[in-house]
Amino acid sequence: KVEPKKAEAKIEKPAGNADIAALRRMWPDVIENVKEEKGVIPLVVRASGGSVRDALSVLGQLLAGAGKDGVTYEIAVQLLGYTDGALLDDAIDAIGARDTATLFKTIDVLVESGHDPRRFAFDLLERLRDLVIVEALDEGASSVLRGYPEDQLARMRSQASRIGSASLNRAASVVADGLTQMRGATPPRLILELVAGKITIPMGDNTDLGLLSRMERLERQSGFDVAPSAPA
Image (cartoon, rainbow, N blue to C red):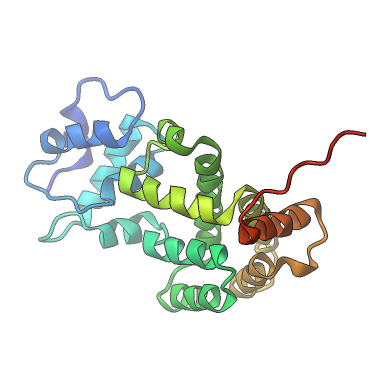
């Protein structure tokens, strides 16, 4: 195993931004004979906040927990405290389909497996933010979201296209409000389940975002966009 200080010393000037390509170039030089599973490096990029020095520190943390199979995605998720990407994809797919039952099942799996509802809500908010960026920039999103591999970005493009900008923004707003409410005495799981219901059942939401979300959904179901009204 490699100690963080020894790993850091192998790079003379760990400056600049940490991205997937940079860390893949570093890995053989910094961490000899230790395998990394697919999905680990994007988590390191995310945890480091773009700092190469912080990325090396995170790698050292992961190496301390590495087993005979190297640094696995499961170990990385557990040590860094992030939500498993598969659970986030399940939640996003359920939001896109307005499938309340599946979203509630995802929350149940999450809680029963020991995940923190607050952490999940924060990670879901981040994913929704990233999907808003993907919806706005499409192919150009990779220049902003450098922490995602291309296959994940392709999946996110599909999700963003299916859900729509208004619905993504509304879902993000609901989750953000839920995170604020989780600071109180109410059990976080209860708040998370209420958030799930609000996102997938928007009929009672008379806010601007709620109305735009319902219009967007109707437009997509009809197969055409509603033309803007002519100015008076």
